[in-house]
Amino acid sequence: MKKLWILNHHSGLEGDRHFELAREFVSQGVEVVVFMSSYSHRGEKYLYEKEAVVRKIQDGLTYVWLHTDPPYHGNGAARILNMISYCRLMKKYEKKFYERFGRPDAVIGSSVHPFAWESSWRIARQNHIPFICEIRDFWPLSFIEMYGWSKFHPVCLLFSALERRAYRRADAIVTTMEFGYKYLVQFPYVKRNRVFWIPNGYHTEQIDEVLEKGEVTLPKELDQYLTEHWCAVYTGSFVDSECLLDMLDTAAFMKQQGMDEIHFALIGDGHLKAQMEERIQKEQLTNVKVFSRIEKSQVAVALSKAKCCIAALKDDRVLNDLGLSLNKLNDYLYSGNPTVFACNSQNVVAESGGGYVVPCSDPKAYGEALMKVYHMTDEERTAMGERGRKEIREHYNYALLAKDYLKILTDCEKSKGERR
Image 1 (cartoon, rainbow, N blue to C red):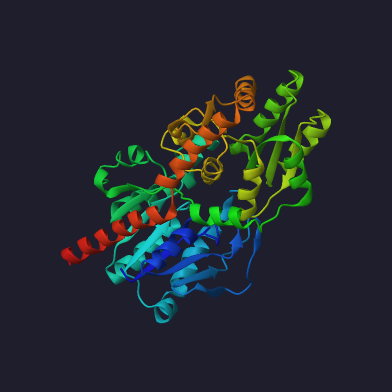
Image 2: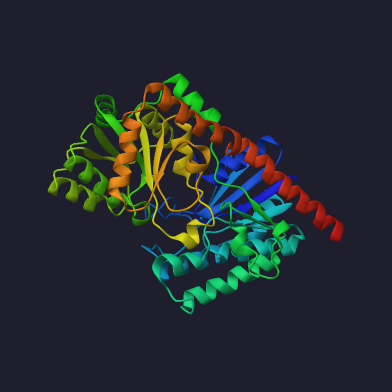
């Protein structure tokens, strides 16, 4: 395995799954090229105006940004056209990519959307190399379960056809969801031994270095708030699936019950931000404060100053029971603080013993769990936090995950060679 291409429409740089895995692959002597869109899904703007931009990130790691059209908001028709544009541009520049980067020895096509699989399969077929179908979100299953779409919706029918074709063609299927195989093996052509679990990981060494050097600082207002209060901290997107409004219900319940020792610091950005701030002001939730999104390294510093980490997930048993792979839980558990997580499905917080898991949408249960953490001794809190750190260090470290992934790639390459 000398050259690897990764096709991920929504990839990114530091902190992104494929960026972190790619750096580990490079350290093992593999040259990696990542192809992504220059349209930022989160920021809803273009990072580059040129149709194709190539940047060498480091020796052995190159990123290519494709100017996919049109710009979009939400999950409407424009977003699907943007996905199709990604495939069109990959095909348009394919020969130039071969000339510049050489031909790959394997290609990973990563969802969320299935069109990346189509482009990856074409590249794999032309070069007689392994095609790895990576699944970070099951489409159209997510649309059906989360948004109530009919399985006969035109988009669902299209995506269903694309996923079946990808699963049939793939030399291996990698999913970030631990129990994703339960969904996949319903397809008669998917064998259990072709499905592998590689979760989203964590660079424990980098976080240790950030905290040891002490050079990364927080915005003054956030730093002051965390210093002056016993804080339960949320970091991430302000979106419906993360149940931020449920957290405000918990804050309101705790204030009503006189449990005002605990303050909530909600750090991030998203479409719910204005609604959250309006409700905090209207209900006079003086135990809650919203802060703007911060950088990945700053998240580690903020969590180190927290007393507890908090998260919640929308109750969707069909999807959640396939396994969770939430980056924030890696951040939380490795922080050394207990985590309180509202979730009705199996999850790493419960498995590691690094916190308390409570039912979804139950402010009373959530508040009582937070009070348990508050009344812990320092020794008890440290012991619970260390259980979470141990789980991340031993099972979610990117260096270990990359070795597992590389073995999958090399085994597929050998198998492909033998069949040829």
